[in-house]
Amino acid sequence: MRKILLAVLAVVAVVCGPALAANTTEYNVTFNFEQDVNGNGYFMTYKYAKMGALAMKDYVHGSGSIDSSSQIYAQDYYKWFRSGSADDTDEHVSCLSMKEDNIMVYSPMTMAIGTGYYARRPLVFDSLLKEKTWVKNYRAVTSMHHEVEYAHAIDKELDVLAKEKWYENYDPEQQGVGVTQLKVTEDVTDGKIHFGVLQADFSKAYEDWVVPAYPDSFALQTAWRDPAIEIDEDYFGTYHIEKNMTLEVPYSWKKTVSDWLPCCSGGWADMNPTETKYWSAGGIFDCTCLKTSRAGMYGLPVGDEPFKPWA
Image (cartoon, rainbow, N blue to C red; front, side, top):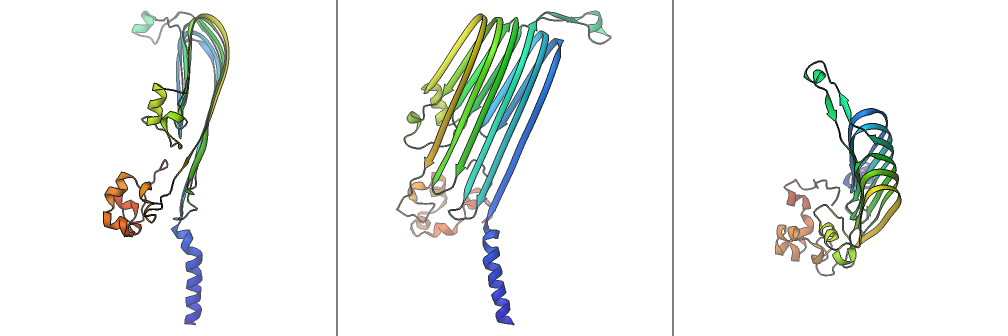
């Protein structure tokens, strides 16, 4: 009976052991927005969305008449799987989409508000039309910007799309692609129109690998100083404009594994300064660093890795 019990315990350990060692985190955030507005008066709208490495903003103000229809869709999916082996994976998929159909005509407006002071002294709204839209993909280091100011009339159809996928399988390769698109067809009367596009030059920022780009990253700073693509256009007056701009940026990072002291974090050359400072020289050279969890660097109990989606 004891041999049978030991055999059963062994089977349970084999079946349940790897599952207990694995760590999976997954989320899927979605947002839908639809709106129709028709009226006269003073209006101001602000829309902002950020999903993963994508961000988008739309701003409108003016006085007069407005007939507007808009849609926004946003999604951020992330899956983080840790098994302590080569099967470890990170997957991040983000999407932002916005469509607008706006007709605005400027006109000064006088409105009496309430029953007190402003009922006896009506407010005068005399604001020319303004609309500003920008979309950014931080990892691909892409930025597109469109703005109309001081206009007397705007008739515009706008379509903005940003998509990004990042996959890391620790084998040892990270790869992804970022797509940014802005389409616009508009008629502007007596106004100022601006278009801007900026794309970083990764060949100058890095040699043979690309890492995630953050707002304060070296890649983004380099993009402003010496970009691969730069568009800066301004038009003053009355115009009919049609534009379709698309940037697709594939990127990857292939990690070089050092043969020298490979037992520690893939090799001595793969260790960052925080790791080399945390582990003693003796622990690195005799490979006992393998017995120390990285959680110790963050003041956590062994086995409690901090959740870092962008790690």
